[in-house]
Length: 382
Image 1 (spheres, rainbow, N blue to C red):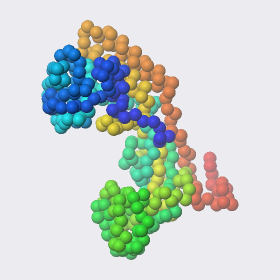
Image 2: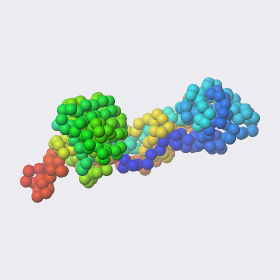
Image 3: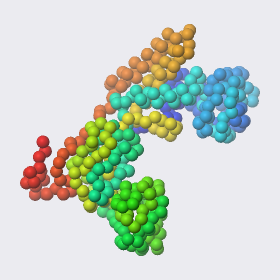
Image 4: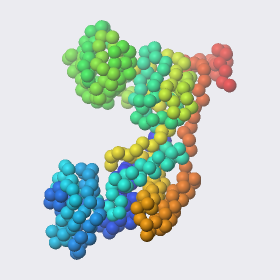
C-alpha cells in the first residue's frame, strides 16, 4: 500500500482555513497572487477589491512563496494595498499569498502537525524503501537510515535482475565524490543510460547507491547522483551496474532472517549470504510514524478528514486560554471537533501492516525443486 493517497501541507492548510470559515478562503479564494507593491505593502488588483478600508486589518498575510507571515495593520481599498506590521523577506511580485483570520499560518501548521502526532498508531505511513543494497559478506543491515523511521517491519524483498555488470575488472578502479572509473568498462557502456543504477557493495564506500547520470564509454567512467553516501570508491571497492527495467521476475521475498525488535527495529539480520544479489537493492516494507510537515510540498497518508477535524479542535482549544468571554464556546467547539476526529479514527483506522513469519532455513532462490518444503534438509516451519 505504498501508493496510498497522500495530501500536501498546502492543501491541508487551505482546506483547514475553509473548515474554520476564514473570510478570505470562504469568500475570495484559497490563495491569490501579488501583483505589485513592496515587501511591507503588497498589492493585489485582482482579488483585493473589497469596498471598505481596513476590512483585512488585524488578520494575517501569509506569503506562501517566501514562507513568511506578517500581521496586517491596514487595508486601502482604492489602491488594493495591504499594510503589514513587518516586511516580508524574499518578497517578489508574483508571490502566492493567503490571508488567515484569528489563526496565523504558523498556528495552522502547528495544529496539523499536532494532529499527525495524535493520529498514530491508528493512522500511519506506509514505507516502501529501496535505499539499502545487499553487500558482500554482510548479514546485518541498519534500518535507522531509511526515509521514514520504521515502526513495524512487514516484509523485505531482494531485487532479481538480468543485466548486472560487476567489477572491477582489475585493481585499477578509481573514484570521486560522484563517479567511478574502471578501465574494464571501456567500450561496455554504450547501452548504459539514466535508467541504470550503480552501487558499491564491498570495500571503500560499501553500501552507497546512486542513479547513473552520464557515462564516458571511452574512459569507463560512470557518473551518479546523489554522490556516494559513504565516500569515494577506490581500488578496494566492488561495484554493481544494472538496469532496473531488466528484472528476471518479481523481487524475491527474504524469508530467513529477523529484525532485532518487533517494533521500532534498528537492525535486520539475514541468515544467508546470496552472492548473486550482491550490489542489488532490498525493498523494505512496513509502517512508520507520520513525520511533521515542514514544507508545503510535504505530504501525508493520514486521512484528510481526520486531520482537519483534529486540527480544528486544536485551533479552538488554543483560544480557550486566550479569551474569557467566549471561553465556554471555544471549549465546546474544541470538544465537538475532537469528537468528530475520534469517531473517524475509531471507524476508519488503518489495519497494521501485514507481518511476515521469520524463520530459519534456506533462501527461496536456493530451494530444491525436488524438496520444496525442505523436509529432506530437516527444515522446521513451526
